[in-house]
Image 1 (cartoon, rainbow over the protein chains, first blue to last red):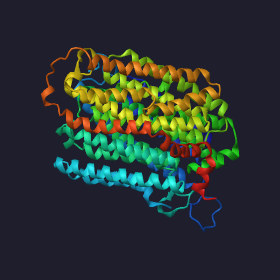
Image 2: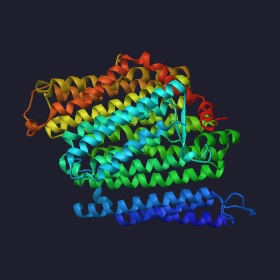
Image 3: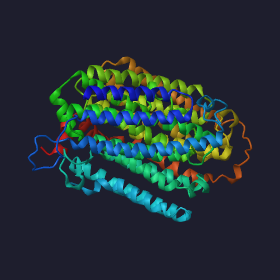
Length: 113
Length: 493
């Protein structure tokens, strides 16, 4: 199971890298979304994938799931959700102001202004 | 258990939330944020005093005991940094009252600055590696807003790059924490340190160490990863630049210092050698940038990078003296970078340009500005009685003692070139024939000069009071050099 997850995470990172290297701003943002998905799945996998009961003390279950990675992922998902939303708004505003979403035209050369 | 620890985080947080409801009333916003900044200074001063008196203070949130819950830890280093942050925040806020402009004030400038302080103080204080990530995000989210607030073309263009770089480094941060968690199974920083020393030096730990160096290096702008900084810091107005230049990169530097003294001190031959090489390269790259530009903003921005290199060079040597030097220099640099950014902000307000070619003869009309700037530049370069000297001296001396001749030599040369790069601003901008500038009459120079002048006084006092401050700083360095002190304070073994 861990091996399978590793492949999945690898594919997500690969796709994310490819998208982030493209010129269109929207693709880049989708890339960052995929990157954070990959990171979250990695976090889940690193906690150990196993079937088990809810982590409550005093129960006689044979194994417990580790609750900590789940709590971390939940936090990380919320944060990346907020950042992505903000990023999209900034990108849209930049598109309105600057009239382009092509990263090649967003270079800061002309007199730094 | 000490509830004082959370006050420097809590006061700005509550202020930020309250200020959101007063966006239309600018005077109320100014007063509330100034008073809360003063309260933060008082709280963090009391905290620093307690830490100095009674050793490391900790606070287990919700009373979950140390390795299980989130712990806030205030050792001497973090208490000092929190104090410095609070002072700089107050200065930047005070400066903003007359310079940031009503449009920005109406659109949540003060709340966002307060949230930024929450993130910075939180990152300095937390004792939990994932909580560090959360505070990083609080700080970054506020910095995204501050960098884009105003919505000019350059700001929009640069903020996109800034956000992208930081989103990627945040994802890497999560990955690094995941790896670390899979190895040690805990998130409490003291507990991680215990578990890591049980494992000793293993290949995977070196990998994690380098991953953390990349993550924090992206925020702290070390050599190959500083590429985003000159462009992004160039865009926002002066008080925001001062906050960014003084605080944001230093949070990265602090995190490297913390993780490389508390976690990854087992395979010093690889990790710290890497850190040292990168630190020296950082100094060289920063100096080249500082000399290459004739734009005053760019010159100071590249000087941030030089300072990051000097501090990390001291950290990489990892002797008590070099750590003392690094902390001395870190606090000096936060103060002096804020001062310089605020001062060049005044120059830009007066002249309407940041191009050194178009500025000259300012000292005729503005002698106070000129001499404040002169003292600040001298302090930046580390001219003996001023604040940069003691830290650099200790870093260089321990560099020579541990036979890192190249690094120590580069640090020495860099101070000379740094002096040259900023003295150029003084000579070209303040000497020469006076010119008339368009917006000169409307510039509230006297008001704006108050905040940087106070910070310059701090720089002078910090330099002259080295003898008095030394025991405080060496306490901080002692904790860094002996992780057991930190561990015992947190886990109470």
